[in-house]
Length: 236
Ligand code: ADP
Ligand code: UDP
Image (cartoon, rainbow, N blue to C red; front, top):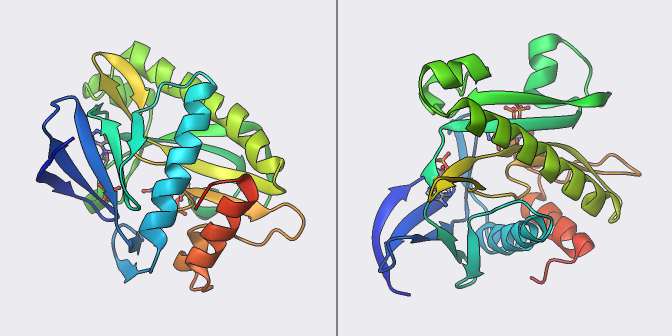
């Protein structure tokens, strides 16, 4: 597989074309950002940890029946993925209240949510990723009614698989964000699943082991990601 031009440099990953029109290379950089790019830093080893973390989770999801873009690990910080036509919305499921839900609704952090909640956000940093609903998604043509249903069903399926996987390692999956795209017309999970895009708490102590350590200046960010990776069995 030959790496070609850089197509896009995001806040944490860069995307490269390859000689295969159906495949891309994702480079997981050490860059970290929060608050829609307002707070940024370089965290040594984060790219490597997240690349391997993502590969491990994507393979578990694929085995559990979720179609994903993951193809193979290429290097310490790179993976080969299917080239998707991305749907510009973020799908968020929450099992426990935290983050923007608490800010928006004034509810305390740490409340069990039964049933888990589902939210869509538009991927638009300039507008701070506003919340949208399925009518906006259909009316503006970001995705069809059927694709909306599939994104919801797959996002909940991910919850069934990953809540248990993390619980088996003594970790609570508080919430997470997924992005989907189309591969030859089929709704497919893209982007990443890493502690950059989810909240994970130690089940016994409720210590935060995810990007909130960076957002809240708690320190030990990559150390926490590595600890989670070791606990769930990611080969680093
Ligand atoms: P952001 O764009 O939010 O700054 P990243 O730094 O993670 O995010 O950049 C990665 C970009 O690649 C995102 O815009 C994401 O939607 C896109 N992407 C992820 N997976 C794929 C894929 N399989 N095919 C095409 N684009 C993808
Ligand atoms: N999230 C993300 N990218 C975003 C927004 C949110 O990965 O652009 C993740 C975030 O890490 C958390 C979940 O989605 O796991 C819910 O985030 P929330 O809406 O609470 O926003 P935040 O408080 O992170 O701004």
